Image 1 (cartoon, rainbow, N blue to C red):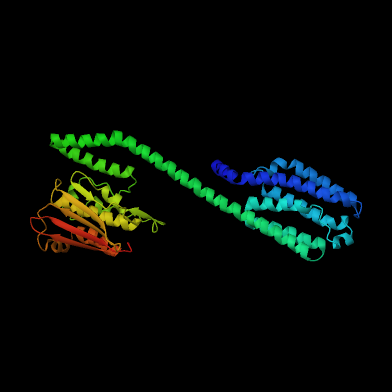
Image 2: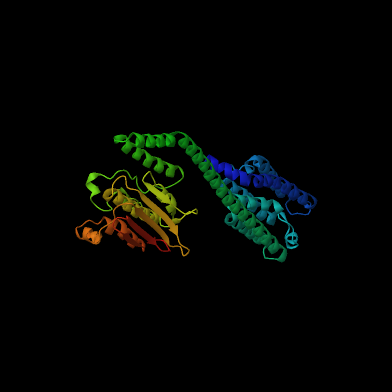
Length: 408
């Protein structure tokens, strides 16, 4: 809240300072106008009494007008009340003849200071409302609407609404600037943390991966897990939203095609307000890379609606889990991400396994094993896309996931 006050002060402070001196100068002008004609008015003592009150009010509120926090709406209401009182007091102070001749009101242009205070404080709506109140009191004082009176009212209303609108635009721009500075600061902090993590944690994980692969046995499995964690952490520090942590599949799921952790990734994240958000599919897929999974992606980001990106990434994760479950934990897999000229997103998952026998997928679905039918093909179908398998015995399996534009 303190930061917000400072930001408002930075926009409004020059205007408040200008208004402070404007009130002093216009008071001097109003008094200077009254001095030569005080002998011709009906009640000069009443006029001088008003100017005495006006001078004391201006002096005692000098510092208050210079501060946005102190210049409250209650104070501005009292200020414009003094203005309206002075305008209506012109009726008993001046003679009817002088009023008909167009004699100025007692506060004269000092009244504009009250209106401008509302415009700076509350924007153009408050400026328009306060100028309308001053204009109405001028019409009551004059007894009719004449050309010079109407001209002054319109001029005051235009000036107050214009200044109020400029203040609102300036506040909006400064809030946007403050938000941009916050994002920049957060980005710099993320980059600093990424450098620290790279110099410490990532290097340690990479060392564990290499040493584990060299030692073999249980250490090799530990090295593989360290490699996966390294890839996931590297994606995290670059801003990726991980669909799931893909570790070795539990035994009870290894027999189910597509039943790995990736199959459920992102399926329950579609909270309110996420329909219009976008996520980089490229980063989601990079998070799945590791010692046995190579990810190739285009140089430019491929952004999808968040729920569509998470579902497509989950389908890719399920395909990789199938490779691990049916080919083996040491099987190599390749993931290729492409975006065609018409906007269609194509993700291809290929492995070096023995391939899938003809009719095996249909038989697995008939047996109630719905990993392929639901975790992969079902997700693509819900998104309006397709999933196709190409498998040649002895030459591995290739899964092509296509999501045409518009995505999701």
